[in-house]
Length: 336
Image (cartoon, rainbow, N blue to C red):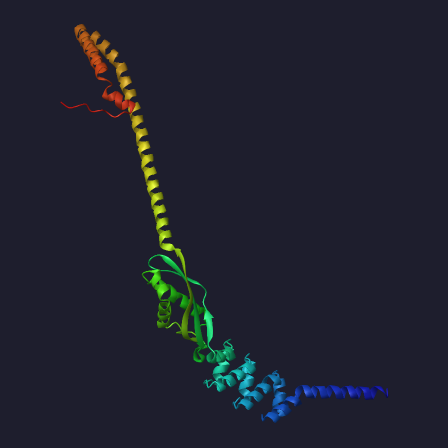
């Protein structure tokens, strides 16, 4: 028991000292005092209680003090609690001060909380960035396709970083300008001779409106000749017209065949009726002879007339009815 008491007391002392140094970061407090940042022990303990790492606030305050910036403790702590990056905001303010770019802490904090890299934006304001667009295909009025690639030099616009459109919008607008310029050209040769027409047209449209950037220049990196779209479209149209004409011709042919079959059926029906009527003639003659409506001499005279008619038909050739039944057109003889 006599040995256990000193050990227990030593452990308690060590725990108390560790707890004290955890809640009271003496090293940071000494560093802040050495840098001229006036912070009290109570303020550091309050940061611990508010679950704010003192190093995330004190170290940026030291940088701000050395750079001559006015960074209040409450503002830095509030920005950290809001989910912002305090160290990046202070670095951006220092870079903006050195580059003589007007940037307040509130503006930098708003840009940082909006999800944009405020330090990168300040650096881009000093050193412009080059955005290379993908290959954009456009067709001139003569039907020739041109493939163009542009390099857009942009500078960050600090005032429009919050709520301004990003790089994809700039690339899309530049592509739209390329398509408009090439599409309004009479021939593709005009674009090949003066590629700067694309740059002038795109710049005149004010494509940086509503974006987080300011377009400094647009340079056409490459222009290549693609396919002859106009000729391909004409070939496709001709093929489509040919298919339509063939379909209509087949429709007319099928209609003519159907009409021919219908006419043949009608001819067969008429011939059947004629045969049926001819079969009734002998019965009618015999009935007329029995009733005395037809004499014997009249009958023989009719037979002679029929024989004479058959002789004339055999000499003259097939009759009109036979020709129609055979489906052959009637031949006109010389008119007297």
